[in-house]
Length: 514
Ligand code: FAD
Ligand code: DLZ
Ligand code: SF4
Image (cartoon, rainbow, N blue to C red; front, side, top):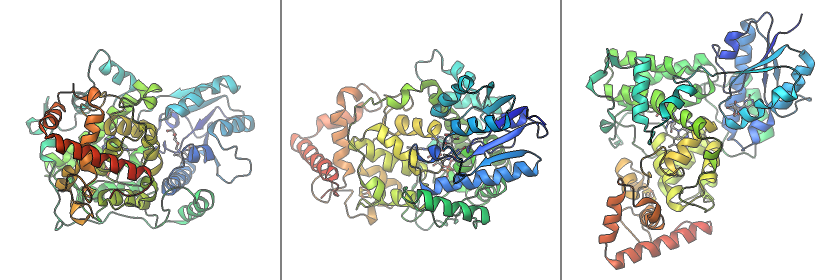
């Protein structure tokens, strides 16, 4: 029997309604899935991230077989594995001789470029179908963006609310307002009850993958064990349900809070699964909306839904609008190498040690840790945005370039000069002190502005503003900081700049600031 279509399913396309699978038919078509070294090493991903993807891929292949599909699955250690998508597709075409290759468009530009070449190199036509697992199509986003001077997420988000009908009462936003973010900035207190995240015992398939990852990628960043991530859609659904039952109510209030030893607070931990395709973003939002209709607070529900149909959709649109130039942008001409402690986690700065520490163990940190601790510090320090981008792509199990790059280069490093964020997310130690209890547990003193023992964020903040004055002072959202600087006594300014110089020099030497 001849195979009509060879359907390639990638590691972040683990969705049964995927456009390529929806068009196919198990009787006449064949699915190809492949574990390839190139994807695991084009940046050396966190060990847990590789294990998660491989295990989820193997489970998904089993589910497809149960549904009647024939799946050709290349394991990483298969003797003939060529190590790349291109090589594996070529090998499969030669073996199976399909009439055409069908694939849903990939999330990353790099992979799309490779696929665009396949029609020429393979002897069969290649159909690249749109990815329908997003609310906005890419042409819709382009239409929305065209002719606008500023691409503010808030306006795009309102379009997505209207399109999906989520939290809409007829034509009006539920509760009379589009956005309840102002209510979502409460600092956490230590006596709050924090539910422990749901974890899953590794099954045989996952155990086998863990051994493989240990053997092949044991030198990559991060800790592989214990491994408790969900690896099937059914398990991921349990994570959503646990979030709705135990965390959603407080998600809004404490969205920006951070506590020593508390890795997740009230966050949902669903990004791994949505991005890999195990969860449908819209279905998750509809479940959370139902919780609102059943009594959950609107600030929590709106805040959560905005992250998914607002931010997540918006960064995807920006990525495809701006690539391939986007990754090269460096508006602030930041050139320093990323501090060594981003890899080791060894620093006396408690906030950074906490955020990087849990990144090593869990391949996870929540949004404010990523933005205001590791991201903020890298920007104040003047790390090269491309190096910062690569760090984030490596270390988080939810990181794929389409979602990670705009968040890192645009939102957290201001590398695009304000296309995505209206001002740099730069902050001194005061912000971290307000939103966390890290400072109370830190050897540095957040109240000390300069000199030995001062919180390093403090002098770096002013040094950052001074260093980038020509590029930033015209920004109305930051001009007040420059007025404060200008009013400061000369000796205080001098102390800040000298202190910053010694912080920068110590970190460059691989030491903690004095
Ligand atoms: P929750 O706080 O519970 O939020 C719910 C969901 O909303 C998330 O699961 C996610 O799907 C979505 N979401 C929230 N914020 C964003 C956002 N800014 N962009 C896109 N989706 C969002 N998210 C990734 O999925 N992959 C990344 O590689 C990634 N890198 C980031 C890097 C930086 C510097 C920053 C500031 C943010 C980054 N984010 C990234 C966004 C956000 O931090 C994570 O989505 C979130 O921390 C995931 O944890 P959660 O599922 O518990 O999220
Ligand atoms: C991230 C990743 C890794 C580590 N390994 C694989 C793999 O072996 N096979 C695969 O199909 N996908 C993998 N992925 C996810 C891909 O990198 C992702 O599909 C592309 O970057 C497109 O977004
Ligand atoms: Fe971080 Fe400074 Fe607070 Fe220490 S004092 S935890 S370095 S913000």
